[in-house]
Image 1: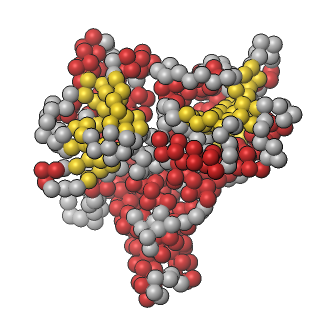
Image 2 (image 1 turned 90 degrees about the horizontal axis):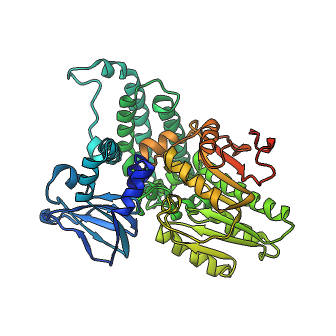
Image 3 (image 1 turned 90 degrees about the vertical axis):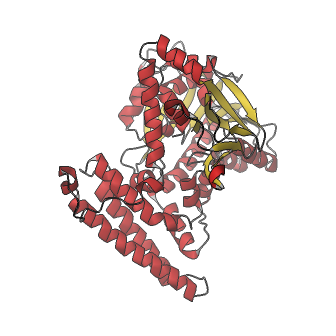
Length: 501
């Protein structure tokens, strides 16, 4: 989830309306300073589009961090009332939302409860940032040291011993594979590749057992073991292609359009043969397999809806589509693409450029509209997009980033743009996702995982006022699809919406 999303998720609907009413949007040209080191900061900034870089110029450092869409700047200056400790400037054309500190302070004083919600949201944001910063967890406590032990430390000894032994074996095999690569003139032998793959399988199984959803360890122990595992593996992750992009988040979030396209294409990359071998392992993770399956599932649903309308004009909207491979694949397989009129909405300007290039390549200019819009703004009424009533609206890989209140607002927006009897499908990872430990603790790819019961509750709280009429799964049963139909005036009280699993 993006930092900006963490802030908004803690806000009430009235808070969100206040935020947009009291903030402005600022466009930045490449090279423009948003914040200058050593100077006062007067506002909180949320990155809407583009890419910003953080520099500590007084110490002679180059770029020390990157900020993409949804990231937040200025919260530490607000909390500490100190001058900026670093400079922030635009690397490419960018835009930010500007919320003056003075407006925040007025709201805290005038509105009971807002201060609690605001500071709780900032605490979640800062905690998320700290958990994802390897330098802060570089030296986890050694459970065998002679320092004083708490009850929790004593309880975690077995878990620590297990994961340390497993990690030592994995690192030894990875180093051996590196040596093998060097000896073979950079070509990793079949035995070296198999060693890397076997080591990866053992490691992920061990991590799932030690700190996964079924583990009985407390959260502190899980986080510390996860940090130890991450810091041990990062030198190798940084040699990969897809996994490195997910971890470094050049667009401010893990699952950007390029990362998802690479996962869909199932093509490993990397700067070394060990890295490429690890990337191949990552692309076979259950979560990556599920992402490829969900793409195929949605493409099949689009095909069915078009067939059900007997090839009449069918309007389909994809929310935060990333590469929107399922749409392009559908167009490519249609004997006559004219019946499908699609709309893709995405905030990320790089995703929009990527989509426009693909649209031009497949000659779909008259059949596909692409809008560079923030779906959260649309769902809260802060921006408008005039769409004709849609036959089908879907989103996969979006609501996993947001808490419940934001998802309900998004479902309400979808309800508003659907035709009567129009269909919506929303996808979300299930809590039993076998790749969750890897995603949470190694790659800092944090999702909100949901059960079918969670999905039903969200739809019941929305304007649909009913649970989904179908709950469906991918082949591995780790990705949940909730399907609902907008009622028409004559079937709104029928049993048509009885949930089916």
